[in-house]
Length: 379
Image 1 (cartoon, rainbow, N blue to C red):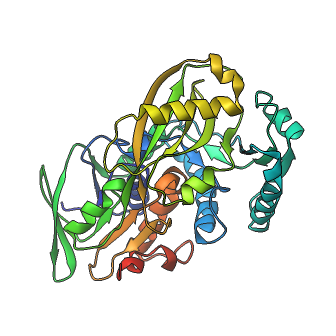
Image 2: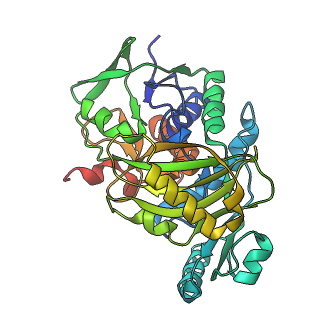
């Protein structure tokens, strides 16, 4: 029997779409050219943050998304190492604390719980921080997951609700007839359907071209370093204040902003980098060296800890830094759910729920005009 919806992409966004569609009784078939979590979702840190989004539609979507995790996690078939342990923003230079104070105030006014901290108060929370920093802020409601476990758990939950999950299957073409989705041609055969969800992450532009839809997403590479398991180095996710500047930048060259995070297994993840290098997912040793050096600047005790592996992934980068979520104008039944850049884990479930609401005609969680693919029609 033909599915109602074909979801293309087995990352956090794709499996979230499949999960909510299957829960709603929609016959859904998910495809991925590789394994589940083989793209950005398998090469990231699992952040669920609020403070890295500017006040506006993206922050409002993130608030709903963060709350949705609290509903979803207890329903999943196994643990995804969800932890609401908060995060800290660290200001390196004392002279930058005035800007940090203004930033914290703007976040508080936008409804994000947070508090400005002196260096002394910051080091009470994180005693291993360097002694010559300026200070920072704490965001107590930020959370993290193990991203690959999150993808696999949502995929399993979707399958338990009747979804067909088909990895290692390449999409060759999409048939459009009279402005409507008709079928998806794959390496395993033709699938007739009336709806497609393009959740292909960094490869969404190519999938969009198959349907004649402009999805202006580019791959943006990021590198992560993983240490050996250790205890009591950092208790919350730590990011330096410059992190948001790299997220919001269009700079093509290599950018580094420190992220340090302890995982449930004891390993520490060190990031982050951003660079446009096409679809190259090879490890950049220069970037790795800069990531490690910068992390030691904030946590000098990392000097004696061994790195055991590194890896790189490709974030789906949209030109206006806003995810693309909605049905394409001019192609009935072709939905886009991509362009989350570094916020895919945080926004995966809420994106999936919104796509389900659009397809089934339910009321939406919030107005979606600012996320619509239609904003690129003239680009």
